[in-house]
Image 1 (cartoon, helix red, strand yellow):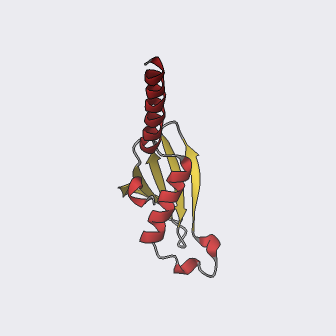
Image 2 (cartoon, one colour):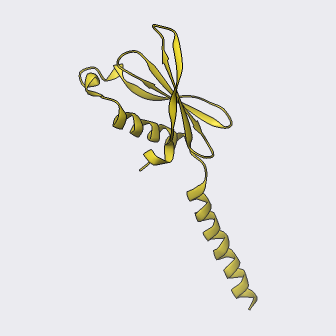
Image 3 (cartoon, rainbow, N blue to C red):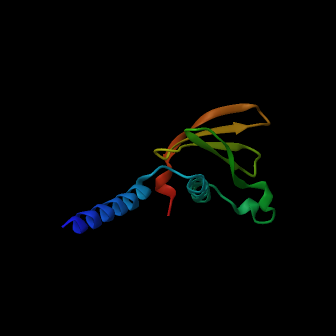
Length: 115
């Protein structure tokens, strides 16, 4: 009987660990992938076909609570994606360096753009 209880406890711990990993927060890799998927679905990348370096998605700085992912448009403007590590809620801020203009650009749920 002890053996059955022990084995059952081990199985429950293992299953609980598996369940937790599916609901854990957002990793840096997930943040980059989700933002990249969003940008490729929402922006026209044809301008970058001849010169891929004019448009890109890259990781920026991160804090304890969020990742910053940067999208650079062929126009030279940047969109900063602030991804909440726990929820995946993502706030977007556009910055146009040539005009020194920064503005809120909306929000997305990053999980909607993960495969």
